[in-house]
Length: 540
Image 1 (cartoon, rainbow, N blue to C red):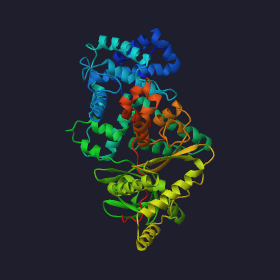
Image 2: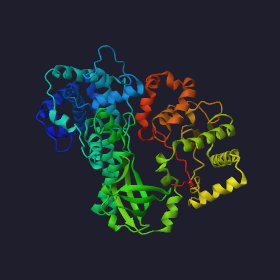
Image 3: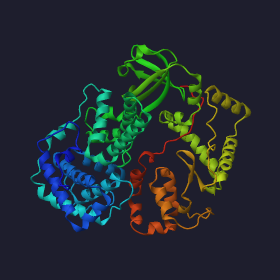
Image 4: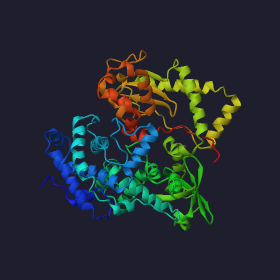
């Protein structure tokens, strides 16, 4: 039977090597939901148009996992709701919850939201409105089954026990395993993080088949991908990473909650080995000169190191110690590699989160003031693409002049930069295509100058002489694409939403009520803007 859900489908949304005596009960519930949706004429055609047969089966299992979560007190859904409420002071996005909505029980609005979430993560060809008829009808049909089963559903004690985390010794690798367990093996992130990671791993395997790489090399690439999703990736739900989710999943009184909260994002790059003592290995991040003290508890290859060896390695900070995590390799000192690293703005920016926030923000504040003066009081400018290079270079000259540095201070600044080995990045405009589009130059107060294309008809600005007519495609591209910063979107909404017919019609009008949640969902990795300012002459 093509539409029947078997145990293999149910277990696909469960942790590895897991089984419980309640599985067949919940499998029966999943099949009832699947039958209810597939036999309804209002939902059947939608399912078959937008979801594959396999995805339809996963969908019914996914909604059943929510039911199991509530019944068993696993608290994944409860954690999402508590995080959401902290941000927005209401129960859920999109849907009004009234006196019939009961926390810690099953709700129509929960099922509607989870249906919306599933549809918009399992595929990315279409964006479905939360008020789509299919979503609302599906929630109603699903609730019919869940309400019938609610009084009889058994608690899954086996699954609940897996979420009862304990790390008595505060071991980093046990904590890392928990992050991976929640992000990669729970139903809530199955169509988001797990799906994205699996696609990336599949691409790694396919690409390396063509290159005929060794199995060890392929595994090292897969390991790096897994590490990225563990420490640096953000979920579509609320734009949070694994550490954020686990920290909130654990009770405030949990002995390991502070340990989890201490986990940093991961730094992967090239380091110079300097020295070691009984407890630590001292390595210097080549791009910035920042010194790191890595605990020997995490590294078994200390005897292989010689001074000024170049290490490719990954580091994560945990409980005020830097731990090795992921891959590493050792190579001999190479002056050309050192120079390339020190002149790479991308490599330097990897440790920006460790810089003094106030120092970086002071620079950005001065640049913003200069940009507004230079650009007639507005943070945005519109121009032909071929004029961008000249505009940006002239602004930087204006900014440097506005600092009013003495000849001595300029000389010292140049000397600091030269001593740091930084001669400036490669020409940012070397591969700049000046023929294909008009450009927008925007000063982001969290990042500095940003340059954008292909959205000129989203901005009905009097200063935008290129504005032809309002373009829904341009507006949706601006909102949804991760290429455009959150700050640019908010500038756009705050200044132009009342001038655009886009926001006067549904469903787009309603999007404004939940725009921050949607931006976190759409932009995921880029919702939280990270400064790309390069600091030089620092004495680490």
